[in-house]
Length: 361
Ligand SMILES: [Zn+2]
Ligand SMILES: [Zn+2]
Image (tube, rainbow, N blue to C red; front, side, top):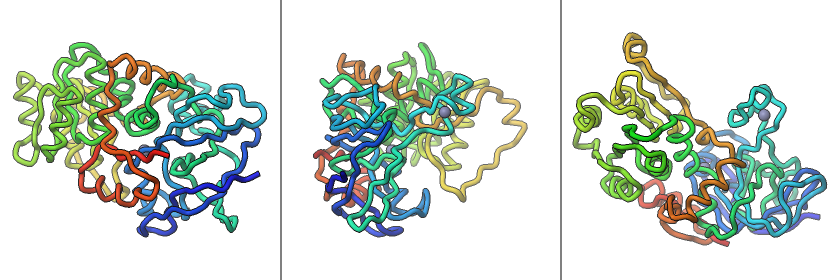
């Protein structure tokens, strides 16, 4: 049986998104149907709408979500109806070359639901990052539904499913920030501020937030930045060196995804330091660096995909840290909105007015 519910559809490249009635199938083998309680509006949803990811329109958007398991299909053992879950867009297969090497956070065959959600006329919908949670019900692979403590507020918990995990994981999993480190985070939106919160949680001593927007720098302080730099007025590389005894930081996290900010991260780190790129560049971007500097500065240049997270390990842990008062997830929720306000939320996001708008159902 298919369930008729409201969902947010991106029908054509660049066109405003619309709420439509969609059909969500009941779960088949290995699938789970989740009644969505909250879903954050992420830049990736906007990238889908702009055709910047693939051209497989129409898309069912939404992927930073939490909810209650409504039904499970045959052979599902990790969750049961009534469980509170966060949806993950990484559900390791267990059998690809990366999973077999013990690195499931790089899984190359992450699982999604087999059945398609459709328009009422049967047109299949491509679900954003294999989820599609701007809808009252979402159908996912069982491994994408990760059970967490139900005491968490759904609006805050859902954010761990994407952007906040990307930032926390960039600092903790990819960079391996530890006690006493100095860290700079370039770009203080949702992901960057989550990287700042992650650096603080990991015990960093100096945490420097860099952005061109004073409002975002104010947020950065609230999440744990010990210093902030407005790079519109100040050369951030020199300012970061000045704050670190002339040396640069141990870890520089680039949360913008542009060549100029990557170059800042590259030069703002100390010798043998680490650069992590978590901002997502667009296809035409290129970077040129003196190869002698790449060699001579040593250290590590890494990219962070989804914070190199393992959802079954990381989601329950971060929810517990939040419930203990050690991770302020609530602060990322700038506003709660209804399903018909997603297009408006994209504009607020583009103007930098919000960390996260969250759809509540
Ligand atoms: Zn795998
Ligand atoms: Zn996202």
